[in-house]
Length: 410
Image 1 (cartoon, rainbow, N blue to C red):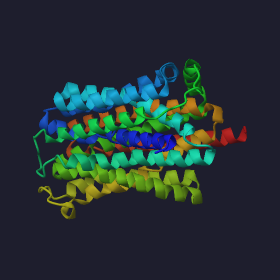
Image 2 (image 1 turned 120 degrees about the vertical axis):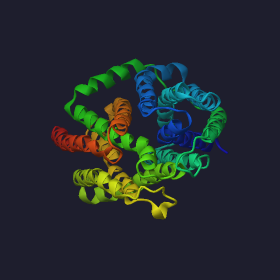
Image 3 (image 1 turned 45 degrees about the vertical axis):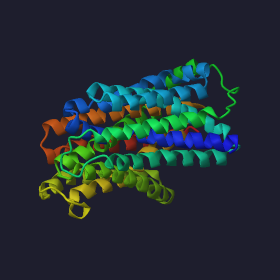
Image 4 (image 1 turned 60 degrees about the vertical axis):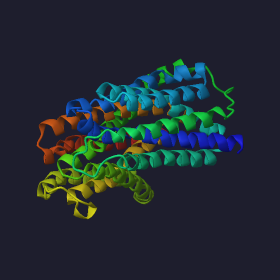
């Protein structure tokens, strides 16, 4: 295997692994309540531990990477993630869950910035760069799809499973981190092009917040991720407690939602090329709004007898797949609008802001969903999400105006 092929393999496998590690929250929320005695209010802290550590490390990542090097930073990230997985299996409990998410979150900025930089080392032109980036992101999506399927192999078929067998999945996660580390160690990377201007990058990133286009985007991205992560992370619990799906089916439902999001992004891209991004995003928002409103009535209509298979699942369980399709095109589209309306010299600090405020939105959404499921009656738990959905519609309209203004200024 050539050095280039080995580098691409290391990047793809590492991003696949992190696609799994970063998307375990929904399953862990469900299983930790059943087998570790974690309360809903405590489980709502899992995503903030992950996302806030991503945000903090993203702020300092630009200044650290030139000092320690890309390869060493990625190796450190994989060591932290692998150690977190071993800790999770060996010392299960609420503190260990929080600590492992904090360690995985802290390692992710090193992995993401490292991979996006190394893509340039493995390609020769813009077309090749775009193609490889799509492939690497595809592996991240594959990890998202696989993690619920993996967990479902360790979860019983009953309505409630109190065993700790699900924790054995973390041996597999730790093994994947070890394999990624071994492959990355064999790759020779020329880092002579790296500079020591990270501090300036951070200052430039902070200054961009005052631009109207960037400010509107930040608010829109925050609200979108707020909605998406709130639904993603608490869908298995909602399916199990409200719709009476067995825990194994509730876990697999997370994989179905990830698949729906993947399909929605592919299909949405075709519609955007034909009708334009503004019309497609507004249509998706309208359908998403209707879907959120319909969840509670459909959930109340469901037969509350335990479900024995997908053919007997209530209609509300399938409605979430529609929500995934409708939500899917929104986030990548508004990121694309921001970047296409901005000079290329600003793209790196802008992506730093994307990571930070996406993490903040995810934390807030997960915490709010925990509160709603704790204090609201079951079927109505997600209904208040219509408020941020309406706010997002306003944000998209403002983003369109700012885009037109930026285009007019050249």
